[in-house]
Length: 123
Image (cartoon, rainbow, N blue to C red):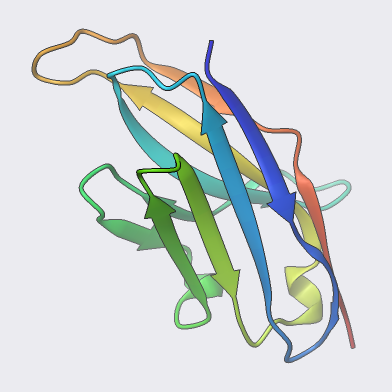
């Protein structure tokens, strides 16, 4: 069973920076696409950014140019650096490991979610 644990986050004023991290334990030899999502009360969880095992990245328009996702494969960690934060970035941020098969291993498609970490941006 893959476990995902977020850390970081906190409170900052608008224009400031924060970083959230995600540690993934019990990694298998499957391929993982690491994702960050966020959610505010009463709203659906929305995609923020992702990074594939080959290092390719994707960002939601809301974070383009302000957020940077990176991964440390040696430590099985993923980081999301958030700069020029806005009050509308306030949310619970969730890390999700999307398990995918590889050419040599038929891994089942599964998504593993962390418990989330709060990011609050004040105006």
